[in-house]
Amino acid sequence: MNAEVLVMKIGLVEKMTFSDGTTLESAIRKQPVEQIVVNEMGAEGNDVGLKAHHGGVDKALFFMSDKTFEYLTNLIGKDFDWQGRAIYGENFIVSGLDEYNVCVGDHYQIGEVIVEVSQPRKPCERLSLNSEHSETQEIVREKGLTGWYVRVLQTGVCKKGDKIHRLQQPYPKLNIMHLNQLIAQKPNKAITADLEEALSCEVLAEAFKRTLRTQLKRIK
Image 1 (tube, helix red, strand yellow):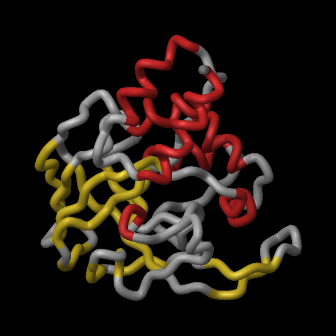
Image 2 (spheres, rainbow, N blue to C red; image 1 turned 180 degrees about the vertical axis):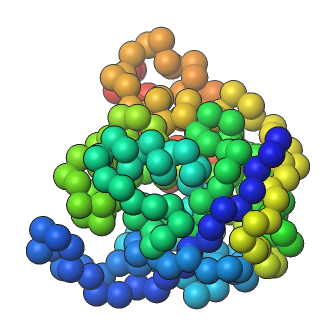
C-alpha cells in the first residue's frame, strides 16, 4: 500500500454567510496546515459546528481521498482545489486510500498517531451550502463519496507528507463504499445478511449502526 498525507486542514467555529444568504456558525472552512497535534478528540485548533452530529471520539478526524475530492468536484461542475481551504469539511486529504479500500476497523499509523476507522461520513446540508451547489449532499449520498471518520488510538503529531501505514484490516468486507450502499439503496431482503453482518461489527460507530437498524426495520 502506498498512501500519503497530501494536506491537513483545521479550523474553528465562525459565523459564515453562504452564497444563498444562509448565515450560521460552522467550522467547515478549515485552512491548510503543515502539521497537527492530535488528541483523543481530534486535532488541536480544530472544532465542529453541530456538535450533536459532528465531532466526538468516534468522529475525531475526517479523511477524504484526493480522487474522491476531484471526482465529486467534477460532478458538481466546480473547480475547487483540494490543496486550498476545505470545501467538504475535510481534515485530511490523502492519496492511496479511498472508499473502496478503507474498511471499518482498519488501523493506520500516520507519523506518531494511530487511528481506527469508525464509520463513513453521513452528508449534511452544509456540504451543499459550502460547495454552492444544491445537489452536493444528495450526490455524496447516492455515489457513496463520503470519506470516513476515525477515532484516535494513539495521540501525537502528524505532518504533511507523512506516509500512511495500514497496521490491520480485521473487517475486509466492510469497506466504506459497501456500508454507504447498504443505506443508499431501497430496502430489500437481499441485503438483510449484509446489514446484520455490519451491525455485528463491534468497532462500527453506534451513530452509523442506528441508520443500519432503521434500514433493517424497513425490510422486516
